[in-house]
Length: 477
Ligand code: B12
Ligand code: SF4
Image: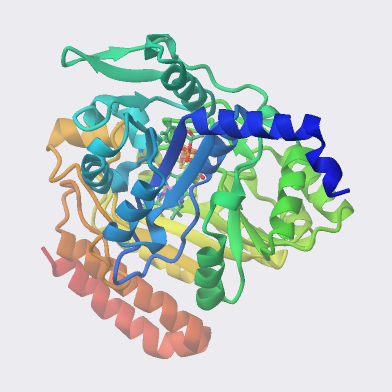
């Protein structure tokens, strides 16, 4: 059996493949996120997008490496990247990673033939990356990166590649638009062997007592929330077939993970699809827990019960505000009543519930912020997060703020990681950063106090605290 693999025919084929492999362009994909020293943000995931691109490249015979900086320091990252001697270096980037991306790429300028950037922020602001990068990919990267690699391999110029921006004589050149991939089932599963599964498993086991990794089951979101940026996948929802999703979940289970994080913008947008995925998970007897993001208008008791049966542990809602006027400003297209209803539906089904809120949105006043804190801390939540409004380029919020007051800063890195109130105010929203951090600190204390002492205990200890801090909040400048 062993010898038959080396029959003269197979041997020649093997040598040919090896030679071809050496002639192929080596691409190293880089995820330039460095875990902050004082790390309080709890979610850490391997870069799915780069995993997808690696698979597309491999399918076309290219050799690929992936360097995820999450568990590395700057020096280690540089060493790893250089060790692969890549001809093409492809960087992922987003809003919170621009400075690191530019700095790291700049240090590697002389180490490769072509520097390519892609991801949400390069898609929104390609020209903002062209000072360091040779090419910026706009939108989905699977087809684009393969075409770029083919051009480099064959010595062709890249002007025929759709969905890219590059400079000619210092001027940006935009090629034709890259269309969305319509049938998501045709995309090979992400190359999970290139992820640092060991470190992610260790991270989650230590922090939560279970291991988890992401899968994305759909692309796109039809809503238009004021603060949300969806540059890569756009507004049309495209879903994978339930069979395709569950086959990937099966692969994840075989890799030894205990849970899956569905990284969809909103996993519950299409109820029929969610129920079919749940049925299939049950049919296949997958032994995997899972979590997902949802919208409050896409959650009802039936769905929640079915999700629970199929292994869903926790669902997260972007509720954002406890005041209907502010929800209107945010264009959430939901109200506080729906939010309460969804949270109770999920809790009744036995799911854990997490929620995200924003405080200090432009247009808010002291009362609306206190409404949000009261509403959020009264809900039976298992996880609660408050953030400041982040004006991400390309969003109506960004345009609005730029128009009325200008931005305090457009660059944000996750470096200030102070306990529960690690946020940085990037824009003038009518409140000082100090006041908003006070609001977040107060809200977290109320939430924790209620959780630990219960409703009766809260009435004794919590209520007086709430009244005093409400008053103090209104007095703060
Ligand atoms: C999971 C997730 C996270 C995870 C981790 C992300 C990770 N490791 O990838 C966590 C929870 C930690 C997170 C945190 C944050 N996130 Co987030 N996150 C997501 C989410 C929901 C899914 C990411 C994903 O897996 N996508 C699926 C893959 C397949 O898509 P992709 O990564 O975009 O890759 C494709 C293309 O971009 C392109 N591509 C990507 N890289 C490259 C590289 C090259 C060379 C090329 C050619 C192409 C290319 O090809 C890929 C395949 O088609 C996205 C929303 C979304 N739909 O993508 C938001 C999103 C990326 N996050 C966002 C934001 C704002 C944040 C936070 C700043 C939120 C906050 N307020 O704290 C933080 C930042 C923390 C940090 N680490 O810096 C924004 C980014 C907006 C922007 N314009 O930059 C998004 C788009 C959400 C949104 N709608 O606003 N996030
Ligand atoms: S916040 Fe969620 S629902 Fe709103 S547009 Fe963004 S992804 Fe869609």
